[in-house]
Each structure stands twice: as structure tokens, then as C-alpha cells.
Length: 153
Image (cartoon, rainbow, N blue to C red; front, side, top):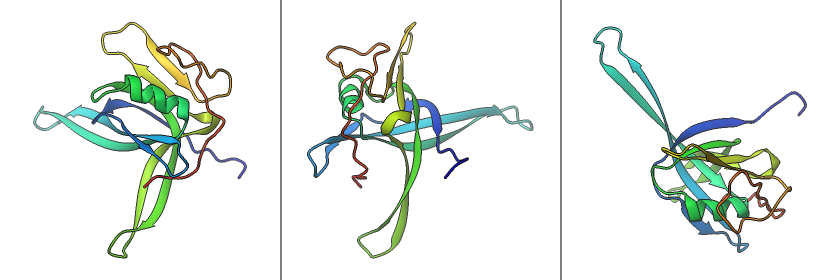
């Protein structure tokens, strides 16, 4: 559809270690639980308030999955660019439910590791420019031409 855009930008911290699963086609997928927080001062009490929102992140790109598996841990701060996707499914009791996640695949996805106390960050974009991911990524593009639309849950 012309004139539409599905793009999500998030900066947050991982709530758990990344979960790496193998799909039925043999490829790996990474799942992240990302927390974003909003803080403010209550006008009436002067008390500091905070609200945390949790986001499911699903990464299909094999190069990005490898980086996530090697370098990201619970508490890591990351910048994510992806697309929002809602999937309808039926649970074990036959009830229809919906699951919403941020998906990183294709050419419009970015994962940037924001180092705590580090003066630099590592940016990994999902593009076909460079597939060398043999060392710690630092502004290297990592890609996979074998993207899969299968949602593993």
C-alpha cells in the first residue's frame, strides 16, 4: 500500500538473557524481552513515578541472531528498529488470542548495542552489504539472504 509505513524505534534494556530457538527449517531465531520506561514527577505529591512497558522482539536474520547469542545478556541496553507484527492464534482451550511483537528481518531492521559506560556502540544493520561476522561487530553490516516469515510461537 502506497503511503504507509510500519517502523518501530525502541531503546531499552533486556529483561532476560536472549532466547535462541531452532525453527522447523533448521534456522535459528532470537527472542528478546525489551523494557522501555517512562519516568515523571507527580505534580501533587512530588513523588517520582515510573511506568515500564515490555516489548517482544523477534529476530529472524541469522547474522543478527549470532550476534545476539554471543554478545547480549540480561540488562544490556539496545536500540532496535523493526516492524510491528500482530499474529492471531488459537490457544489449547480453543480461544482465539493475539500476540504482538517487533520483528527484525529484511532490509529495514537495525540492532545497535549501546554499551553501558562505553564510549562507542556497535551497530548491526540487516542489509546485504557484508556478511563478515567473525569478530565483535563494530559498525559492520551483517546480513542473511535466507529470511523466513515463520513466527515460531
